[in-house]
Amino acid sequence: MSGQLVAFFVLSLLSIGGAVFMISFTRVVHMVVALAFTFLSIAGLYILLEAEFVGMVQVLVYSGAISILMLFGIMLTRHDAEETDVKKGPHQFITFAAIVVFFGIVFFGIQHTQWPNQGPDFSSQNNVKEIGIQMYSHYVIPFELVSVLLLVALVGAIILAKKEEPEE
Image (cartoon, rainbow, N blue to C red; front, side, top):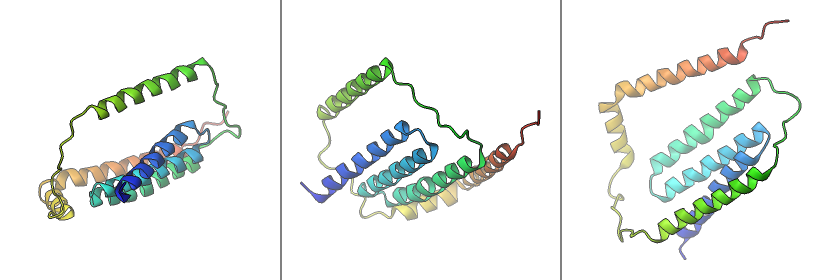
């Protein structure tokens, strides 16, 4: 059992655990922390796959920026003092059974798939340099339009969050 396999299983369990905690917590701040934890473990999986650029972008954009943006959104909006309780009922058993069936189907599919013995060798290529050349030579306009779109969305979110309710 290699160290890479152990790291894969640990990061996979952390990623799945963070996602499960994110949907099972009732407080929004705890959900954001669990989501950031999931994002960080996914970045670790990208680094294990030798996609260092994508892993670092995952850390910077999702783990950093999106999590901070969600926390600001929580702070800028109003919340009731009482947290709503999740009603438990027979639908939880059905959901759990559906998850087990889905896991079984995916596990069976993975076990019976013919995987190639050797993957492509990316170690001789400089992925970051190639991404930069493609992005700044062929995709400059879409890159800048996405940045403007994100800026407009941020300003709109601030305006909506600060909008005062009419007094009664």
